[in-house]
Image (cartoon, rainbow, N blue to C red; front, side, top):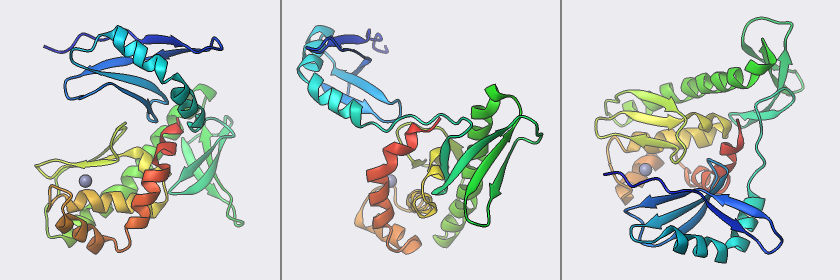
Amino acid sequence: MPAAPLAPILITDTDGTEFRVPARRSARAQRMLLRVDPARGGPELVLPDGVTPEVGADFARRHIGWLRARLARLPARVELADGAEVPVLGVPHRIRHRPDQRGGVWRIVDPDGAAELHVAGRPEHVARRVADFLKAEARQAIAPRARADAAALGRPVGRITVRDTASRWGSCSARGDLSFSWRLVLAPESVLAYVVAHEAAHLVEMNHSPRFWRLVGRLMPGYERERAWLKRHGGRLHAYG
Ligand SMILES: [Zn+2]
């Protein structure tokens, strides 16, 4: 039976600032966990079985200083709206709404290197259109690479999907299907290539053994730099849209 959903916990700091902390139960959790989820841009309290919400609220209250500091460090959300800047394969693009034009979303690159995404149509559709454009770009950047990497390893590859996964940049199923977060298109191209190589290497080694990492290194020499980039800056990619 699935655990009953928990009510969000309200905690108040000494200066009167109130925080609403969504809470959930986890059978796997060994202890209480207060975290800030970059994907959702907010806090979350995880309670193991047997710990009451009251005890959880106490725990959250004791760590309110930590929570506030973490929330303050979250990257500001960037709406996909006219005037906003969004990176496409690491290159900043300014979004320009063109209500007078037809034709969806197109890219304009100036000779001096400034890049823009022009978006036709009604203002309330700009965000959706830009997101759809970015997802299509992600698919275009990821799928041929994944097939090439799989071929280099001599493995068949199943379906390649691009979706909005909150927790993982990529995954590889036992059947050889690969799945990726569309947000990788916001990262530098080499970082996207690293994640593709990583998942392709799982077609051979379904683990993170030294043999697995040797395969990643064969597909992408020097991948450690990209891996480090993702650890350090990956959370920022969740701030868009
Ligand atoms: Zn992995």
